Every structure is written in C-alpha cells, then in structure tokens.
View 1: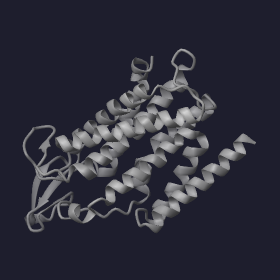
View 2: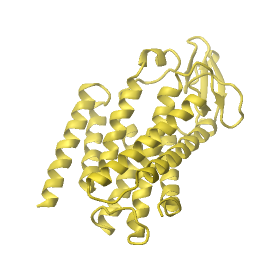
View 3: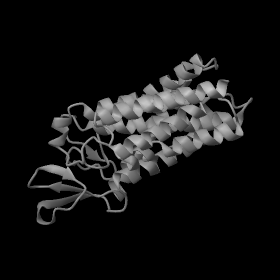
Length: 279
C-alpha cells in the first residue's frame, strides 16, 4: 500500500512539474518529457526526491529573473531547457537514489554508525542538488553584479557572463543555493520522521554547494570556450569569425557537459566527506 501511495505521489508531482515547465516555456516538449521521467523516478525512490523539485522551482525563478537584462550581456539559447540540460542536472541524482533504493531500501537518518552506505548516498545526493542550485544562482544572479568578475584561473578581469568568472556576488549566491538545499534536506528528513540536525545539514549544503560551484567555474574557465562578440557586445560560446574575441577556455566541453562533470565530482566528494561532518 505504501509503495502504491509513493507511486501515485511521484506520478502526480512529476506530471505537475513537467506541465508547469512546458506551459511557462521553461521546458521544451522533449525537456518536459525528460523532466517527467526524472521527477517520477526521483520522488518514487524517496522523499528526498523533493530536493529536485526545490532546485527546479528556485532555479527557474533565478533564470527568469531580469532575463531581458541578462540577454544584453550573454548570447544564450534562452531559458527553455531541453532534455540534455534536464538530464545533466538530474541523472546522477537519480542514479544515487536508485542505488539507495535497491541496496538500502527506505530512506534513513544520516547516521554513519547505524547505516554507513545509506548515509553516504544521502550525503552524495545533498551534494548533487547543492551543487546544481549553487551554480545556477551563481550564474543567473552573479552576472547581475555591478562589477566585472575575475577569471578563477588567472584572476584577470573578464566581461560578465564569462565561463569561469567569479565575483563576491556570485560566491554569495553559491552559499545561498547550498544553504537552501541543506535546509530543504533537513526539512524533508524531519517531516519524514528522521532525526536531522539543521546546522549540520545547512553547513554541509553550503560547503558542498560552494565547492561544486567552484569546480564548475574551473572547468568552465579551462575546458569551455568563451568569446566576446565585439559587434553585439555580448558573451558567446560560438566564434563569429572576425567579430569574435577569444576570452578564455578550450572548446572541449559544452555548458551542459561542464555541469554534468562538476556534479559527478561533487557528488563523489559528498559521498566520502559526509562522515567528517555528520558525526
């Protein structure tokens, strides 16, 4: 009976999330189908799947915030996400939850003495979502900083929107994103009847979210190319021949691939450093 309830809840929430995203044009039709699939799997595997919903709701708001102004600084494909972008921000989390569901069963309180594997997987999941939200807020809100950022690898000033550019505003947004996921994980565990320490959860979210955002910046500065279109006066990832000025990075990874790699690395870090914080 409990499995049936979880199935119905997962179906309802995933359907609402996908439909809302499609109607508000934050998801393409294929992106909405991918969002439904990952939303269903995430919530079906446990209540911590609601962290994905928290990331989606806050991340979407941040993406649309002052979108017109951001479009004047960065030449992007718009805020409508396709399946690749959806999966890059969720597939590792789904894998973590699936492993937990198969090998550990029901979600448990993070307690490394009682359930070390389940606790490590829970920490990896929190790190996953903390990285996603920290990086999203850093990118979407940090670009609105009054001053130009510095490139994380060389510390030289670069135009706003440059991949790998960091600022105090962006770092502050990373901290905020990580703390929101940490607090969200605490609330979910508490409402599920699991013992949880709010301070530890929030600190863990901040630490791993900020770490993940920094890793994303390093990858963006080195393996993701950034050009400045001198005619349009915007940042672009595509060379426009004579109008484009190279700013940083190699043309090795796309933005979606950078997000995926940074999430993979930070999830692994969260898996192993969890016992150091949750004592």
